[in-house]
Image (tube, rainbow, N blue to C red; front, side, top):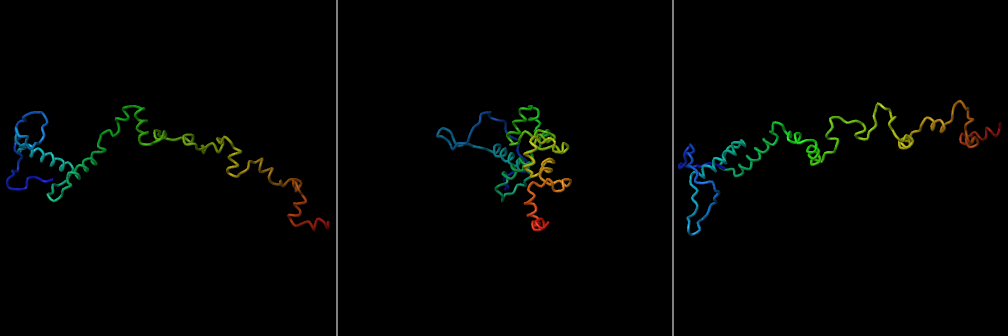
Length: 186
């Protein structure tokens, strides 16, 4: 985008002539009854002023050698104004809970996105302060963790106060310790 770049132009835009109508009309090369469309200085100056306004708003300096200035300016304007609303997304808040839920759904956000804080139950977690008291199926949990309850541990291991009396198969125990010969000599 550029402007008139020869000595035939003037430095100030001439005043526009009064409008000759409000109906939209299009260019034509004539149809035999009517001559070709004459666009005149008003139309050209209006278009040039509009295009230069786009460049100015997009902070693009007109350059005769660049043919992508309008695209660059329009992209800059869109980027600069994308989040310029004073109360960004306020219209969704004003529309109510249903509109807010729909907006979260459209963004692919789950139900937790509307909460200011999360509780353990919100995400299927255990509460630290309950110290595993909130585990519903404790035997299955112990199996999954490969740990034993106190009762299971007591039953699984030999008790010191029994002094070997709780060994179920004493013969195998003696063999495993390599003491068979000693026991036989006794």
